[in-house]
Amino acid sequence: MPEDLCDAVHACKSEKEEKDIGIEWTINQCKELMKFGVPVLHFYTMSNAGPTKRIAEAIF
Image 1 (cartoon, rainbow, N blue to C red):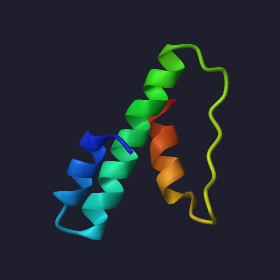
Image 2: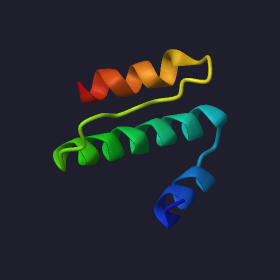
Image 3: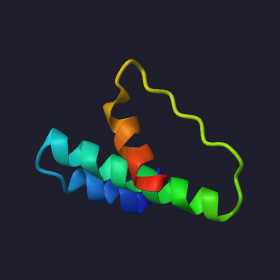
Image 4: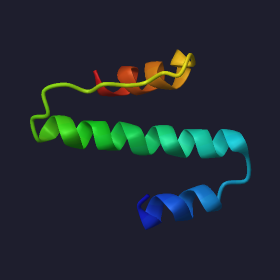
């Protein structure tokens, strides 16, 4: 994992903050991949579609 991401997660005060940081980082990574022309993004929801829905809403 990137050191900046590890630092951000370690600074969190709650599990919700950790999840929000992960979603934020994922959104930024998806946007960067799309900027470089990646044709497809594939997500594993692990029976929890909420975070993926938030990501999709932010990038599409």
